[in-house]
Every structure is written in structure tokens, then in C-alpha cells.
Amino acid sequence: AGRRSSAAAPPSLTRRAGSTKTINDRKRRAGGMVRLIDISPLVSERIRVWPGDVPYSRTTSASREAGDSVSLSALRTTLHVGAHLDAPSHCAGDAPEIDAMELETCYGACQVIALAKSSGRIRPDDLDVPVEAPRVLFRTGSFPDPERWTPNFTSLSAKLIKSLHTQGVRLVGIDTPSIDPQESEDLPAHRAAADHDIAILEGLVLEHVAPGRYTLAAFPLRLEGADASPVRAVLIAE
Image (cartoon, rainbow, N blue to C red):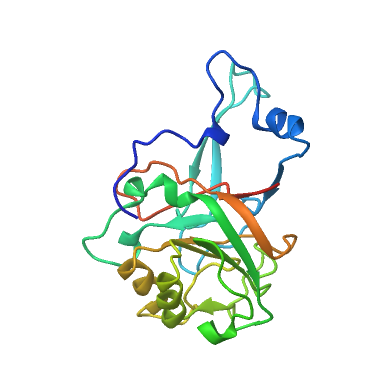
């Protein structure tokens, strides 16, 4: 979290003026191919949200099937639905909202770490591989179905957040609804992340992703004053 960046998008995401070449065209010339891996759950009225939060619903105000010239619909939902980024203001007073998230934090080198830990908090000594990227996603398998609430999911410890900070990590992600357990009220992992300027990416689907190095793209909507934003999280494998 921090100031909103005005820097240009990474060259790999932009087209040169006057050129129709895409990133895949360039990779083909280099003898390779980019593979996009979607790590976002399907958002529908079946998806579960945090107990007591606002569930996802979509209402239709116009429909081509009903004879209207266009189809129009509106959403009502918690911003913490599916894959989403928490803003520091979610749990810390006088902290930046999601519209101030630095976009560079949401794009770049990423590492997926798989852990056989079905519940409890992940601690530094639970990691059996070195941290190798500034964005780390934890594949726990402890929340296997986004359409069925599983309360005893794996979360992160404040000690792990602090350890990751010392290793240069600027974003942590997890395949559960939260980096803190459901019964937590003081949210130590969230607070540690806010204290160390580490972004939080929750609600991912990682069961089909092999551990290793990728490029992450997970940009939030520019929602003024908001405490979170849904994202379409994608890993780029080369």
C-alpha cells in the first residue's frame, strides 16, 4: 500500500505505438510461449463470503431477452468476495484505502509455496523452501471449495509476516478467505502486514498450480475510500 503510481505499465503489458504485436507474438519469435493461469474463483450467488458479510447478488435492470436494446445489471456484495486485495484501512486506523494501492505491488515476480498444513497458522519454520520472490502465495488446500464455507482453514502468523518482510516480500497471498483464522478478533497477521507495508491477497484458487516461480498480475479496482477490491488474479508462466 502507499501512493498511487503514475509510472508507465511494464513493457510486457503494453503494445508499441503502430504495432499489432502482442506479448505472445514476441515470445513466439523468441521460441517460447506465455501461459496464463487463472487463480480466481468463479464469483456467483453460490460463492461463500465471511459469515455476517454481504453475500454476492446480481440484479437485472434491462434485458435483451425481454426486448430491451441492451442488457444491464447491478451488483451487491462485500468487496471481500472471491479473490480480493485488502487495503491497509481494512484493519488499521488512518491507513491507505484501496485506491492508493501501488500498482507495482500487484504485478511482478511471484513464488507459489505449497504447504501440507490443513489448519492453524503458518510459521517461519513451516517453510521448507527458501523465499525467492517479493510476492509469495501460499497453497494450503485448506479451503478447497469456494462455494462451501470451511471454518478451520489455514492462516498466517504475525511472525511469518515479519520474517517475510525481512526477506523483501511486499505481497502475501493465500488460498483461504483470510490470512487470520475465523475466530481471530485482533487480526495479528493483518496488523503485521499493515505495519510492514505488505499487501494482502486472499481468496485464491491454487489447487491446479505447481509450486515455483511465476509473474503475478492482480490489480484492484480504483474504488475511492474502499477497504478492499475484488481482483482477477492471474499467474503468468513462461
